Length: 160
Length: 202
Image (cartoon, rainbow over all chains, first blue to last red):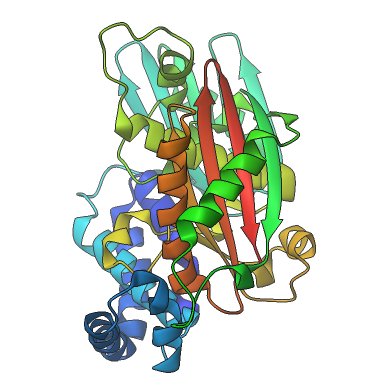
């Protein structure tokens, strides 16, 4: 299950548009769990068809050896499979000093989404025309109008 | 974003699991509903700046939640329908934001499972307690998982909430029983206030 511990990072990668990285993380998890998931699935199916009342299901599953951890494994596998299959095309993700980011321009404003592996804690930069926030490495910002790459990098430096 | 927050703890053994017991999830949910109605709420302020950032954990592909929040919560809706997708995403974000603000949960330690809930054997989200010290001490746990179910109700009506709560609890027990931990987060819109209740199951 260790390979799957980073599955939330895969969600973060796809959030900033880095489908390639998201796929890589989820692929590792899929490969790790593929064998055990089959058996878990079959067991659950078997127990479910036998137990009529839903409230008796928890105990029946445990008696057949399906523990919480097995149900988590199945869910992690399915989540990784979804991330792997449905991650979109590769977008243009930029990088600066360990920060992966994307600037989404939607007419009147620019949205900045990023992920910074070395950033910690909480930091916010309030601007006249928007803001940029960093929380435990997750970066998000909204700026009215557009922002140049140089100005954005200046802001990133202050966020660390 | 200002919220009214309250939490309570329930012993997981209260729920029926054996064949010699009868299904009393509805009754238990009603008791829970009664106690959250009378609960002492504290004021909780969620940092508005982190709301849009949390959208990486949500189930539906909706962005810019802060822009929609005001309309969803305060504005008179007239002839319009409330959007279910939106209230779902708002409830997810508020739950994760509260976990972060109150128990300092690291956001990347939250695993959102709602998009695979069709499996029928998993809940909305999970946190590995071995990575979260503050939550561990809150629950008096040494290890294990915290399984989270999130329910939102746009009306404070009892029948609606009791039904949702009962379903959530049964669903939670499938994966929590017998040694892990559970949390049902109920977000209720009551006129123009948002009430958030955390029901911990130990």
